[in-house]
Image (cartoon, rainbow, N blue to C red; front, side):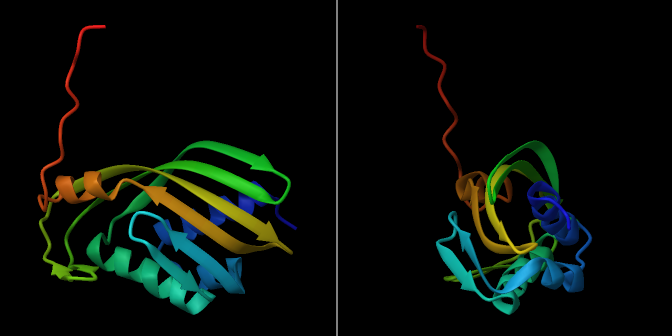
Length: 148
């Protein structure tokens, strides 16, 4: 049986490859996905995959790159950077954002709880304002430099 980190990383790799069958095999049937930046909470592997397919529609070439990984008991934490180009409609609660053809590079952290060789839950943290700014939807404030 794969270890906790391998299972967590395999979900990102399955997304990178847009391999939804592999993703389904990695998720517990009643898994929960909590997407903090969008306030979406998906329950069940089918709903989770549907949400991920929405991201893949908006950013077909999107991939997560691993920066750091941590594990404790049944929990794996992955620090990632998501990169891709916005070439498809991005569905939001207020309607679709049309393709901007602009690249994104968004830092993220995902916390996985693994039980019985399957992902039971995943909490995904990323900066939605950075993503929206990069695709030209909103301007993000630039940090000011101040003398210490």
